[in-house]
Image (cartoon, rainbow, N blue to C red; front, side, top):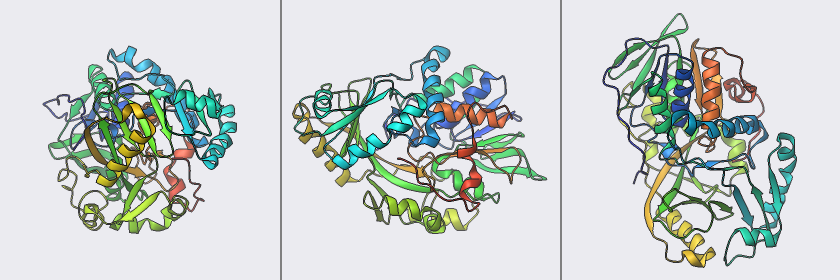
Length: 440
């Protein structure tokens, strides 16, 4: 079952010309549209399904600096600043709250790992501190667990996955952008190595600048134009409870993660538990992903599913240049894994006596698009002048979505970047650079 996402209307007329066309209306595409429209550019936001309908509404809603890879820290700091401003600028609530993040563990090795991140926190001025066993127990109320310690970031928080991308898209529209849902981008129109337009199922838009923010579909979209983007889709499961008692806003432990939603329900999941389904694209990029697979071997299961035959990683996507493949799957909506749903509920109920009777409202699956080093790509594409790629967020994209959009907008207009884009360059994944696997 797909998670609930705020629905917005589409603009009736596809523009003949736009300064920028954005392919993919998740949080990254919608944020980029907003920041480009603020600059006064004409923007067409194209989505094969509905705004925010894939991973942007299927995540936990965390907006964090804590425990991020050092390469992502400038992007995270920028994003938190932008989150603070968005509701006031747009005039609509995105559900962003600096409620703090609480980590607690009964695993000494995990606690040591959190402690080892402290130099990164100090370098970037993150307001975080280690928790003693007693402090962790105090912040995880009335549990049956014997915590050995924890970590608390007072300035981090959450936002609403059901609201964020639609609100950003509407904010862009208020500034002149147009939104086109159920309108798949089929391919770029390229002349002399430069973008001159985008072919969609509803017609062609003339433009000299395109952002590909197509999430799990990004590698397939750019491959048609001779661009190699190593990307793997990892299948995850999450659920939402019915409204229940409050045990905290954003909580993390080794066997569950919890985010309290505005209506008093919780989004629940297990960090790092995922299924890597064998697919033709996965086999194609197996060498690039081997270091990450080895490092996370215990947390990731390997299996075979429908994604071998359908979707962005399938045989059809890899072997055939079917320009209608995107509209054949309006929403990438894998089923949740029942055993993971049961495990999540067991872990939460056994930890919190006061949640013994919580009920499931809905559960869903998701394909998280990952890069070999678990760091996003936000990059101009050397082979195609006028094309910028922003994808491969590796499960981190929601919280840093505003920052990715802000940086992508700067790259599109050739403005001086607010942060160094070098760690996010596409070339690092294809030029033989050593893969340094980041934090998830």
